[in-house]
Image 1 (cartoon, rainbow, N blue to C red):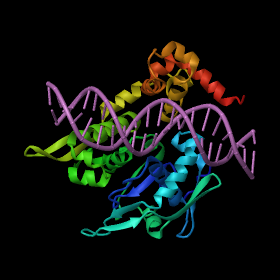
Image 2: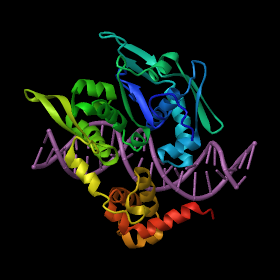
Image 3: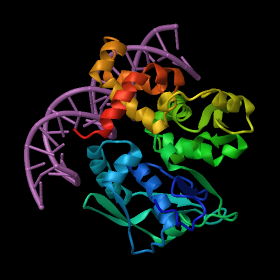
Length: 319
DNA sequence: TAGTTCAATAAAAGCGGCGT
DNA sequence: ACGCCGCTTTTATTGAACTA
């Protein structure tokens, strides 16, 4: 691993300018993932318009924690669809510009070459006080899978410092490009807000909730409440985190989120584990979901450590 | 044999509608 | 506003097959 990058932020970070109004709008999960992964590559290399940035399918699979098979298809379709995708931004107050993300992309030899426009290349590099930006660890946002989770997480990180933010309902719906049925607020809550907040709180570095802001009787805005789980300013949360590992008996007291995902899946499909710890009638995916929650907690990691060790051992030896 | 594609299957999202 | 049901459509996952 080389760390010779001259940029301020390491390759772990995806950084986007706040001028972009509708980042991720209308994108499939694969397109969002691709964009997040390309952001640091663009930032840390000097490619110009006419030159491409390359992402290998194998790397895509690893970063997104998906199968190699899925990665080929995801990457191929993402690179194709991204060509037709555009975003809008305010070059100055009162003006709105619409622009394409990329000029073209070619899929070959197990990866994609993506050609960005100069405009976008600049946007993905220029970050200072005149060009406010939002930054997050790509590894964290890539854990998200829900349809609007990337968008909501982006909004949350953009306003993390404030602890909360109000988004006009109309703006939210427009910038998320939600289907018409979401004009019905209960649908919007159920399928966008609740599910995204839940997924984000469960899987990322922030706890996210929301409440409605009313004018008269009608809801005009959504107020997102954003709390960083490890923010030293909030002592309550801090204490919880510190309590987590009073002692560290072995490697398996604490799993990284990536490992949680990986082992939840492996355990759910492991026959020996299943015979003891999976209820009859519980599907593989249900078990996996349950394990994902449980494996985030130390007590369960220890409880299942026997199986985890077995899985870890078999992962390293090539049969 | 690693890398890739494909087709079948499973799961989740979308969407209206209904009762409370 | 909210939760729940059922049907349709979209997306993800898997294992087997192809190929260079």
